[in-house]
Length: 154
Image (cartoon, rainbow, N blue to C red; front, top):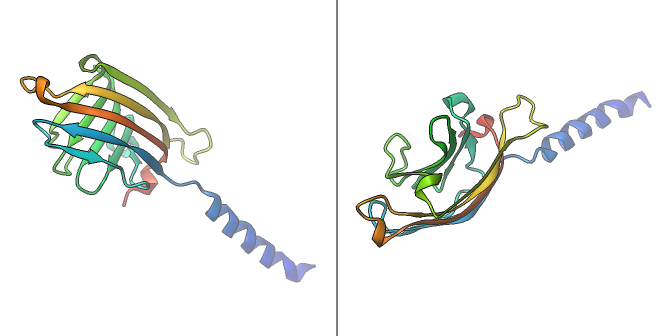
């Protein structure tokens, strides 16, 4: 029986590693008009990372061309930031709930996360392009994300 113990321990460790759900993101945002052009944002399914180590509550998603940040802003409430050049420090557009016809959100901390910082949730938005371009486009769609953890940053 003792000879089986190391095998059992290895199997338990392998199963635990395989069962970690890891980050996941699905959905699509459609954008048209200035200042962002026309494109569909489909997040890399494993690209979601939380803002825990970067001092915000929310997540960053990428399709390796653009970055979409969804966050709980203490001054403005839930906010959607779009960086078309891939660098979130230079956003093309920032949307607050008051700017949009539809802005439905969900953001929770995963209860089973080992360090308590993984975020799950999603958003549904329909927002006109920022003035003065509001009549010629905007962004709309929905994204769901789960288990977005700082540990998943590449």
